[in-house]
Length: 148
Ligand SMILES: Nc1nc2c(c(=O)[nH]1)N=C([C@H](O)[C@H](O)COP(=O)(O)OP(=O)(O)OP(=O)(O)O)CN2
Ligand SMILES: [Zn+2]
Image (cartoon, rainbow, N blue to C red; front, top):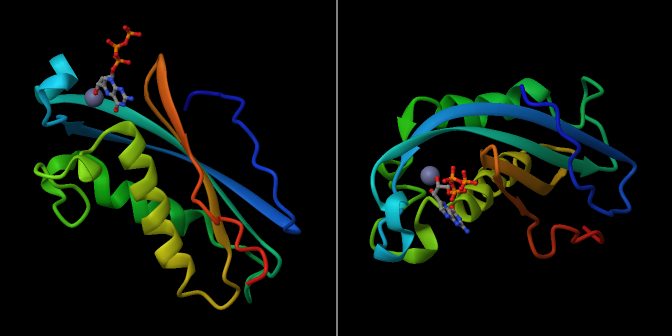
């Protein structure tokens, strides 16, 4: 696992956890403007997920680290991202598997899982590294609906 200092996100919650995970996946960006990236190729993606909240569950967890890994790694590892049509669509630029949109999708998948838990933590940031020289940081708008 790459050792990395991640950008921090300001928030008022009492607890914050971070989970690093990685997955190997192929993709293509179905746009002429993507140049060589419009051809199928692969990456080992490194993600850092930031989750925060005020309350812990019955195990004393904000959320179990291993559940976060399972949600993302088990779904995307050794797969072709474009084939996950529930998340990515070749005919909609807002659903192409670019680094930006993969990061957003990871955040949405995790938030939807967290919404089903009793203590309701929030996914505040997804850092996603696609290559040794390229990464994206996604923070959901209102990720801090802090009044909830
Ligand atoms: N804003 C984005 N730009 C690019 C994306 C993307 O998802 N969002 N993706 C790609 C390609 O998929 C490619 O895999 C990564 O591009 P790049 O960083 O250019 O890859 P290199 O290894 O060639 O980078 P070098 O630093 O030049 O070695 C392209 N752009
Ligand atoms: Zn790529």
